Structure formats: structure tokens, C-alpha cells
Image (cartoon, rainbow, N blue to C red; front, side, top):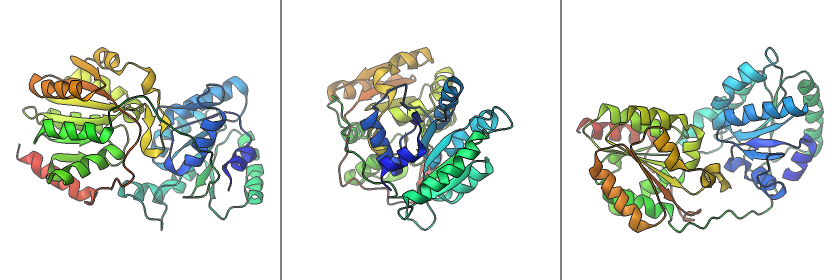
Length: 373
């Protein structure tokens, strides 16, 4: 299915969502056509955020908006779908486009397996009529289903197109870049060198993959690291939970800008609890790079000021390795909650691997190590 035809058949003029690699064709099409344009296309902080934003669009225009997301984001939309959009409440019609990671029978990473199994069921349980689009889906079939969906939408109910791997084609090429010079994998290598044997909680995506490969290259054990392979936006809260229970042990959180934005309230909770043993490193490339490079708003906001306003006693931004090393070393010795924002470029090695241990093995090894501290 050519992505342009999908957009034409749906016929909406407002899209908002959280980027997904399964929907890269759609994301690139929207970026090529609209860029970031509040009237037509907004990349939101999380899926609940964009669902509410879409509701506001409908209230202001009477038109039907489109919300796109990976299926991992279904959990974030349950509340606004059930208590805002639902036809028993405000009856706000929305078209959801959902990338189907972990589809049964299709190999994927462990964090997507269960989510993939329940993707369509969750939509149906929320009263959202779903139609699966695969490589074999014809434009005629899609047009016929959209006509059915228009009747459902007119009744104030919601619908969804679930997109199988490789179903959307003919995406325009879009280059995502910034002017930062530090490379994320090298930033992680510097963190590993200075953190020593301190436990590290890393965020979902390429950061955890790079941390795993850094340990391999160094001949180090993976027991020091908890790789948050799913549940985007929650690594800092996991690190907080560990830090509170291990007050005498320095704990590091390697976070990303997209993840921080997704559940930014976590920073307020961290700052209020101010664990003196937690070092929060946010690697900021202003992009959802793991799923294709689409921009986040993190390039335009002041994370240091936000951290300080949330109660972090110390927060700093660095954009070069000399300053990074100095701040990492100082944070390790400071015995105070610290945030280090590290500005970095967009991009990763083409041959970047994935963890070779299972999620359960990672958890057990990490817990066993924590029990010795």
C-alpha cells in the first residue's frame, strides 16, 4: 500500500502522534508534506498527549483527526479513550493508526511479544473498530473499509488501522540531523568508564543496545546494567526505585530526550525525593532516533531549568567530551542528586547489535548484583 494512498483515502488534514519504526513511511510522508506544523502535524510527548490534542482539534473544527503510534502506546491511550473520547462520554471520533510490533508469527524483540498478542484485542476492548492493513491489502479494500468507518465515526466512535510490518511503501526520503558533535555510543562509553561498578539503568532503544555492546567490547559483565528494553519513559522511575532502596550506592540512569518527554512528571517525583545517590544523564539529540529520527521538542526546551524547577540540586548541560568527563566525575563524587544533559548527534552504527541475553536473565543478574551491595 503506497502511504500517499492511505492518507488520501482517510482524508484527514490533521495528524498527531508518537513516531514508530513500523510507521516510518507515514512519519516521513508527514514530515515531507507538513514538517512540524501545528495546523496539520504535531509530534506529541506521549500517546495519551496526542489523543487529547486530537480531541481539542475536533472540538475546535468538528473534523476527524488522526493519531498514529506504535502498539506499545496503547496503554497510554486507555484513559483518554475510555473517559474522554468514548461515545458514552463526549463521543469524539478519532482515527488511530497503530504500528503492529510483535505480531504473532513475526519475529520481534521480547518487549513486543505480549503487546503484539493483545494489540487488536485491546483496541476492541476499548470499543475501537480495527482493520488490519498488510502487504496484500488493496486500495479497493481500504476504501471500502474507510466508508464503513465513516459511519462509525459519525456516531462519535473511534476506529483504527493496524499496520503490519512492511505494509506501507513509497515513503519520501527525509534526512534527520543536527549540529551536535558528540556521538551517543561514545557518550555511553565515557559514562561506563567513570561509573565503574556502579549499577546503571538505561532507557529503551539504541542507548541500551549501545550500553550492552560497550560492556562486550570492554570484556565486562552485564550484571551492572538494567536494560529498560520496553516501557519508554520509565527508566528514571526505575532508577529512583533502586536508588531509594540502596541509599549508600551510587545509581546511574542513562536516559533519552524522547523518553524524558514521554513521562516528564517523573522528574518532579525524583526532584522532590532528591535521592543523593542518583545521577540522571539525559542524552539529548532532539530526535526519536531509534524509530527513524523524527524530531522531539527537546531541542527547543531547557531541560536544565526544568530539572532545577523540579528540585534537582544540580543540573548542567554539556556539548563536548571534556566537559562531559568533568561533570561525570564531579557527579560521582558529589553525593547529591544530579542531572547531566549531554547534547549529541543523530545516528548510530549500521552494525549495532542487540542484547544476546534475555530480559529475564538481565533482571536476575542485575538483582543478584544489587543484593551484594
